[in-house]
Figure 1 (cartoon, rainbow, N blue to C red):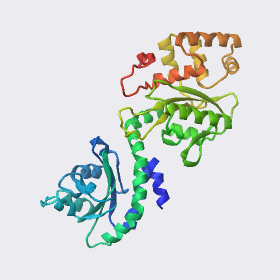
Figure 2: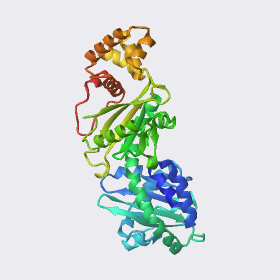
Figure 3: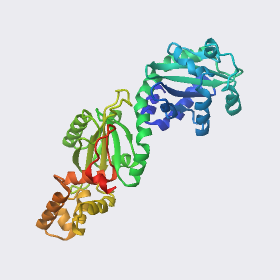
Figure 4: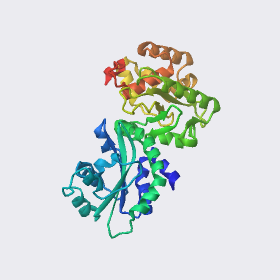
Length: 385
């Protein structure tokens, strides 16, 4: 079961099930993992993992009552790694002999009368703790549980280290990704090594079709075509080394295996937290992808309005967004090929886009006004928002 713990690092929805297993191993009532952040206290609000039966309302009470100077968990960072503290030992060692404010809630909510915990990791920025709750007359035996956690603990430490950037990204970009799902735009966040650590449903749907993009070992994003795979890998690596968000981006056109006249249009932007939200541990790429078979036409109206495109030019842009070639656009619109070329030239002139992939980037920016966290000037297209 230990290897499956690592799956929770990039799939937070799996934490509950995995901790249910750990609770059974420890023979306690539940297990709670939480990050105590010394630099950004709000992180504790969303780096909290617990069993499947811990409700959101319980989480709020736990964070309010359980992480205070009157509770032993506030002192767990003083312990050696993977060393259990039982009950109020740590609190009493720090001179607090007053009745616990946490235990009455624990008894009422979970019918537990005792708690134990340990420190999984600690550094200047904060520490991770594990706490487990149980009844003194139950099957939980502290020293037996401690022996088990000395084996599992280092794995939990590593999983939490891997999970922290995902938690931060979900907290910062989660709502943004949900909106783009409804706009039929796929968005994924990759590490420098092309590992997918976060994607919205549309991005996952595009990958699941097996038409162009693939997920390999270690959730590594690639392409079916060997040449496209190399291009994508090199572009991600290059973008991940760039500073800021949206100062530089790169567009790729990856051919569809199903329809040789269509292509998936990807836009890559460097994703860094220049103020250190990831503690210098994360450098990656934000990828947006438009599926030629599930494109959105919301871009067309914004492009037409902002750049004063004619109705025909908007139709040509719509076809470009679907990945159609000039010949296909001509056939689709019932126009001559030279006419399509002329209209595309007019669109390029009005928008300032250098090529058809540049048009896709502008369309995406109208929906995704990307900017980094150092106050860069917004792209001119943002005026339309």
